[in-house]
Image (cartoon, rainbow, N blue to C red; front, side, top):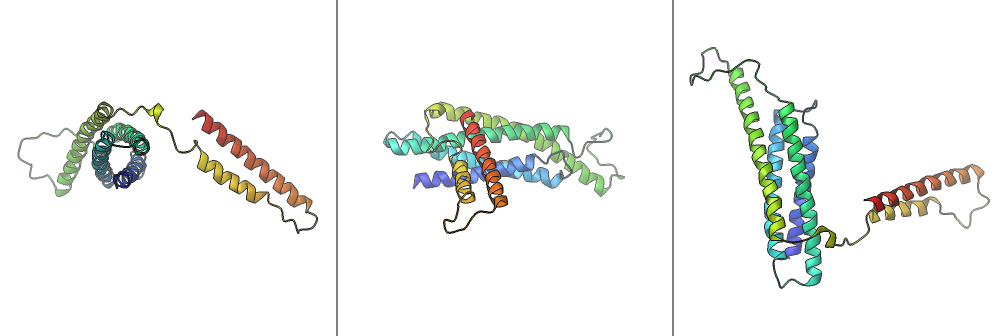
Amino acid sequence: MAREECKALLDALNKATARYHHLMLTVGGSADSQNLREELRNTRQKAQELAGATRVRLTAVLRDRGLGAEGRAEFERLWVAFSGCLDLLEADMRRALALGAAFRLHAPRWPLVRTGVAPRALSTRSLRQQADRDFEVADLRELEREILQVGQMIHDMEMKVNVPLWTVQARQAAGAELLASTGASLAGGVSVDENSGPCDPSKALAATVFSAVLLAVVALVVCVAKLS
């Protein structure tokens, strides 16, 4: 039951982190807007809430001395995946901070004097722009604090649960799924019907070229898997 709960939390965290990464890439672009900045804030806060819940659940399980060896290995794999997800979230938050500071949506065009009394000539539009500027400044400051909080969370995780990354073994080799799908495509591409007559030279040439390309892809995937 705990394993399924942790997997569900981790899956939700992965989705929130992936969404945040996608939104972060649009900061400073043509799609950048006030709505985007607000969605970024909501998404990162949701990701942090999920990260907090996942950390509490995994920490409690891994600190249980009655946990069996097989169960511990499974939860350690989840812990490593969770740790990597947090690292990516922190890195994206730092990029979002840098981009948000570089590409200000509502940079003031003239000095603002705060006297405590709004001038009569201040229009509703100006008030709205001022509110947007205040939100942007407050959001960047809040983002700075949240980056420190995520960094502290990562530090606390390392102190409370000792799971060296090099001791955790994956269930399958790197790139195994991609190699399997590529191999299946290769087998399907070079299959020959035993009941068919003499082959067409043009079709045989096309099949040979296709097979060579697929073999090159397989070789590239193997090299990447070995280097990763």
